[in-house]
Image 1 (cartoon, rainbow, N blue to C red):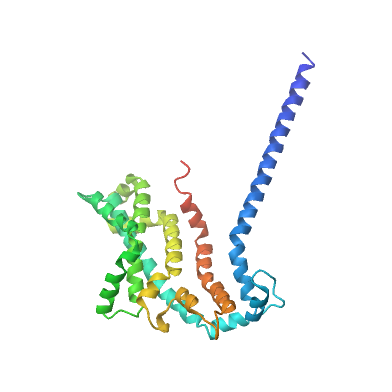
Image 2 (cartoon, one colour):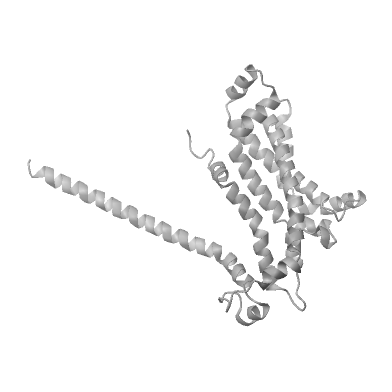
Length: 295
């Protein structure tokens, strides 16, 4: 009996050591795979960054992936002075921020109403609103173009603001209704007993609890609207109201496409979305994982 205990202990230690070694190998494999995926995903960004630091002659001679002979910021200067990147970014901000605010604000009102203030026909209304997600925007291009043209809004920023806000309401309603439905009704009832009306319940109770969902919607809506190319093509004609994506696609050199200047402008265009993600990162990750783990 005295010899069995040390033997059993040694076997247990060996099993633990094997398990730890297997776990370490698994972690190494996981990190290698994630690193490879990160490199693959980053290749376009790396290519754009390298191109933005080369002259057009160097791009034509050596291609995209070779390191530049010397770092040149000429393309960034050209994007600012000749490419009008500042005006394009300002126009994109004038479209993106109001459209985000409007779509999320309407999504909050409709989502809260459908989740907590159910009424006869609310399910039909919810299906009607969410059905907007299944309409491809291309089928309404001509009617919208005629409507805004007859209203005198063509070649202004208003059509893009209105359309983006309208197309954003279904997804905002869907996300926020599902989130508000997870909040216990007892919280709302307790606030009402304490004397709060529905607006106060929404503003003081529900909205602070919904920050993760709002961060997800703000990030996604901002990214979708900022990167949109279709509606600026349809609703704008003059260079003064072009957004950054339309300006980026229409940028030309004297004799050919200005790849270096386009790459520099693409770097400028990616900065706002990057800042939005960094600003909302904590809430964004929390919102994505919301409901994945039961409390």
